[in-house]
Image (cartoon, rainbow, N blue to C red; front, side):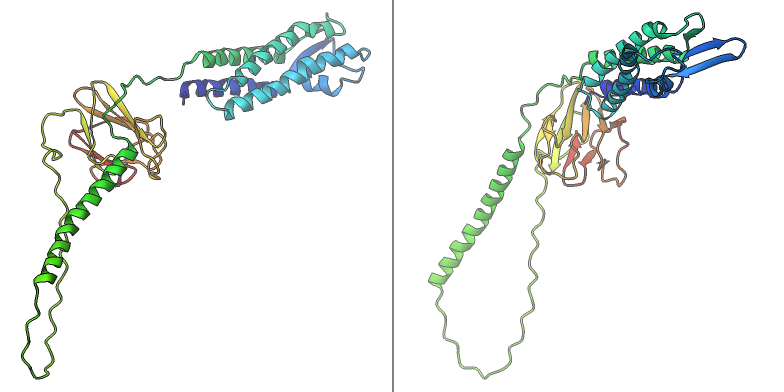
Length: 340
């Protein structure tokens, strides 16, 4: 997401929504000597549109009604639509910016044509609302223009071609397990068939029936977990700028960094490391950067990123340094990597 454009559109929307408050402020004033000054807000113009009373003090006309609808009611409604659309819309929508420009044009026309509908121009004059409408609309238009000119942030990271794809890794893991099972089962079946062919049951002498002593139960041997291959064992030393997958979808992958390169991790396909069907990994989980000497990580996830088995996740939206040799867990321990 282009957060800068989104923040600009929200700021412009807040400015244009101020016109709703200005609608209740005085737009015109009349100096009635010696009785003081009367103020007329925009809502009073609308409520008395069909009456020949102040602030008109004259006969009702169709032209005056059209003027009220076009330059008082219409810009108010467009301001409301533009403000809501700019806040709830995404960062790429441009409709709210166009509507804000339209509001500026309508309020400029209102400001210029206002004196034409004063019954006695020497007694009537503009009040604060006309100036505030112009000011707020102009500021909102400038912000909307900057939002339109803001370009989406581009990541210039080089494409990494030696990262295994998710489907290929899954297939390799299934195939390797299948081969191991075949290698373990084949010798056992061969020995069993050979023994059955060569084994002749010897004749047993008659023995009095005596209760046989129960044999002691044999505990099944638990196979030891395979040790990490020598090529994968971490030897502390100067940082090399390599990320090694320990568990999960990228187990066994060695991902080299170039100087200044960042690798983005998450479920969305626009990331460099994509974690399909991993419920603990956020859509844009985090990114890891190598500056040539140190690793840096910035977490933006909802489930957290953890270092060296810690129960406390990294702070969000803050780039922090990670020491070489650290093991990071993406969401939980199912997907872990070591930074070397």
